[in-house]
Picture 1 (cartoon, rainbow, N blue to C red):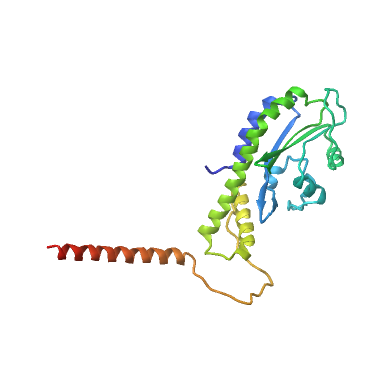
Picture 2 (cartoon, rainbow, N blue to C red; picture 1 turned 135 degrees about the horizontal axis):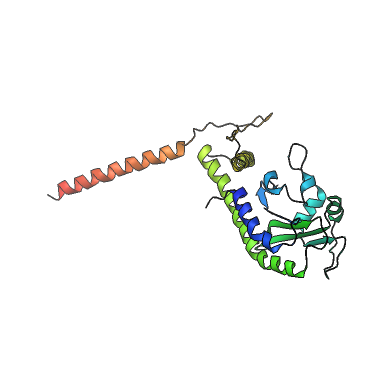
Length: 249
C-alpha cells in the first residue's frame, strides 16, 4: 500500500493518546528515512519532536549536529524529568540540556529498532509533572515492537516511491549521480504529502560540473527497443508456425 504519512500518523495518534495521561501529553513518532546514506527528515512529520527541533533552520532545512548524529549512531532510551515521584529514575544523556531548554518537565524517548537497525524514534513528553508512570511506560513498551515494524514499513515504502519516480520520470542513470536524483524525488514526495499545489519534478542540475565524458540517451529508449525486439520475435515465430503448417500438408 501507499502511505499518506499525515493521515497515517493522525490515525496512529488516536490509538496512542488513550494510553497517555493528561491532555498536555504529546506523542511524536517519525520514521528514520535514509537518503544517500544520511538521515532525511520531513519537517511536517517531525515538527513535534523535541529531539531534532533545533536541527531545523529558519527556512526548515535540516542540519544535523554532532549531538544528534551521535545519538542516531548509538540510540538509547532517554527518560527525563525534573521531579520524579513515581519511582522512575532519570537516564543521563548528552541531550538533557536541550530537553530542559524546551520547557518540558517530563520526557521519554524510545528508539525503535528493527533487525538491529534504527527504524524510527518515539517521543512522549509533557509540560506538566509526573504524566508518565510505570503503568503508562509498560503500555507503551508493549507497543514498541509493532511501532518498530511500522516505522520500517514506512521507510521501505519511502525508498520504493523514490525508485519508482526515478524509473518512471527519468532514463537510466549512472550510480555516480544517483544521489542527485534521489534528492529530487524525495523533495517531490514531500510536496505531494504536504498537498502542495506546486508539486512537480524539479530539473536535475549539476552546477559548475563539467564531465570529462558525456553520453546522450533518450528517455524510455530501452523500453521501446525491448518492445520492438519482442514484436519482431513474435512475427518470426508466427512465420515459422505458418511454414511448419505448410510443410505438414
